[in-house]
Length: 198
Image (tube, rainbow, N blue to C red; front, side, top):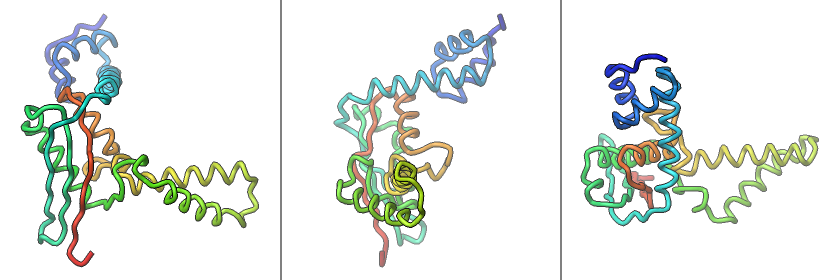
């Protein structure tokens, strides 16, 4: 059994934003293996975020980002449960980052649930037509079309886009990370992107 030092707990806390006690428990559970402890805490954080997902988000703020030169701007309505969390520096930075991301990536919808069915059907029809002459069997074409639709979702849906400041996570992952660290449900309700001449 490896000895869990205060330094190990401090490093894990810095890497995950988890509480001291949670870090110590995680390190103990995995016999001091730092990477395994990070993974364990991430899983706990995601499950904690999932539990909070049904809670009402009646507070929040509007994150605003104006690109240098003032030719483009983004606004995001980011909701949380209390004004206490909405006033924190971490939440305000999150709202700002999401607004900046919107300017950079031009999403069209918050999530795939927001896309009208006829728009999805039109995209699928285009992909099917592209594959029609390929000579591939129907079940293979279905899988290819499904893959293309998933890729399209990751381009047009804010929550599924890779975060511009860290391409290893999506906006949805970013929200879950902050749900875990702030202890409240967080949602992006809507957004707007403005561009001169756009």
